[in-house]
Image (cartoon, rainbow, N blue to C red; front, top):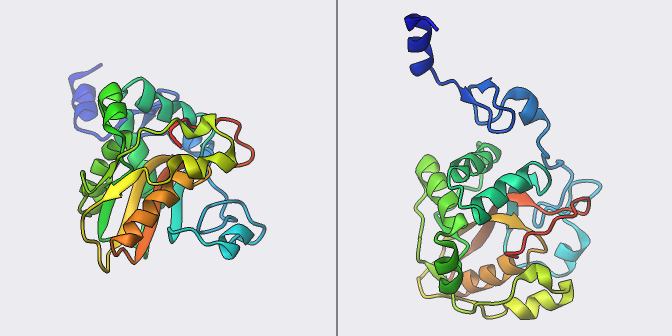
Length: 238
């Protein structure tokens, strides 16, 4: 490579696509971006479950959750599931800003900008075992790029419950009940909870209940990926 060519590469914004390694100006090249498992526009705005007309689904109408809305960048399918697992279980922290930027892209020009970000808490035992909280890693990037304060220790997980994915769906609510504690005042605040994957939404709803008790008027979920009916893989943290 000529000195001029090397100089152009060093001072350009070119990098390699995280999936195919081709030269790109973004985390994903255009072909790989087109083939990511993007969510359809026709889904419930509260829980993201598919609906024929993009309206609120029947369960959310009949029994509204404590959270107001959910925004997810993608569905939990290949290759996004592999990237999330690389972050969580292989401690590949370089994945955090890449995944966070997917959320930020989805939130472009959102009319629902929150006052505060709260990362989904990990129990201290799980945090000690893993060495980091993936939701916190995502939240730091989102906070910095969107200029929204993040409360790193605003809420705590006080019960080290069994993984949700190992339980029947009808047992998940009782498993996660009273698992969180929050002592900060959130009166009149719109809070966005940051997490990596949403499956049934039970964990997110339990945290939203606590945030509402502390005075939050709105609770949004900002998620990398949503598990949908066609997705066979379930994330063990929910």
